[in-house]
Length: 187
Image (cartoon, rainbow, N blue to C red; front, side, top):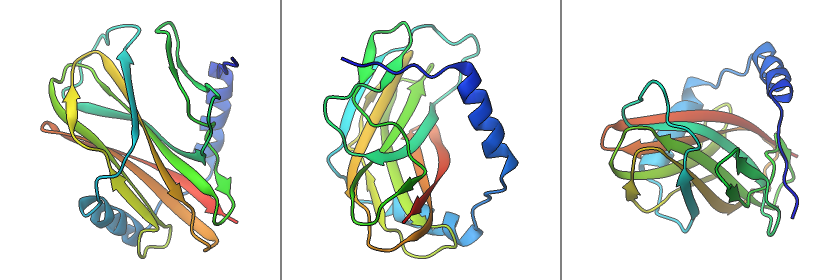
């Protein structure tokens, strides 16, 4: 079994590079993503949860989105590890560029620091300039409890339409919603 650990230096360099490039999504793309998520069908998603390794010092009321990525679908390659928790989740490493027509997955993680109640995850992929979503879906509602991380993986096939897209992931609970945006280029 292989395990990948990403260092703080790698994350800092990646974050610095991301901040250097202006990738503000268009208002039309954000509106299209919100509409696609609102109308998204419930799809079969892999869902796992595990206790957080430590309790947060400052409680956050509700669900907090922590990552949304796209990747190729994989099997048997553990690449998500919550340090110190023994939580191992089989999802591919995130990619910013993929090939049209390939089988892919949207992965979304969120935490529940103090929230108890229903929660679900949803995603949409829309052209960066705006337009119709090329993929959208949401998980079935489930019970969430404080001190847990939840990971969702939604399978999809990328369209035969090259271009730049935004990937939007949303964690939803009765306390509200928390949204994250990432970018994807399809060749």
